Length: 158
Image (cartoon, rainbow, N blue to C red; front, top):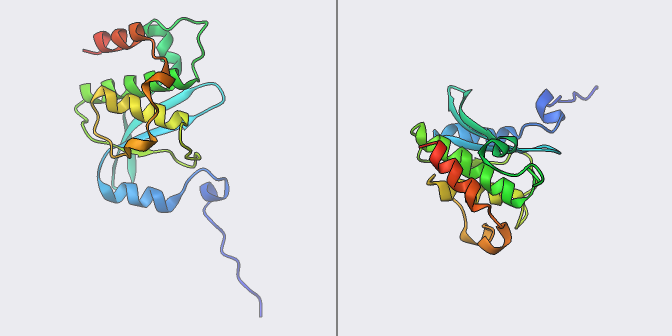
């Protein structure tokens, strides 16, 4: 007798989607703070799902920080740029009326002190309510935030 092999969904085979986690996010009914890292940028989006159809409410890319006064000689993929990207996305979300979100890191590895948690801290500092553990957040001394860029983000989005 031949044995049947169950083929996984294409996006699961490509290691792009964790369907169990996605199902939990959809059932919660709360907007998601989606975070993706590339080799050059940090990308954040606030996404709402209705009937398994995602709608991007607002997004922020670390490259946008250059428009807010971040010098071009600075890196746009380090911890402080990650924090400012999360802060920018949070400010945009609050402007659109989103007050609560859940962090969705996809298939990124979660380790203490990671850029993921710099983005989370930025979004929380902007005023978004995101459930988290206090121990996982990065301390202020480690971030080295450019205060002028943070003020510029707040002023331009108010």
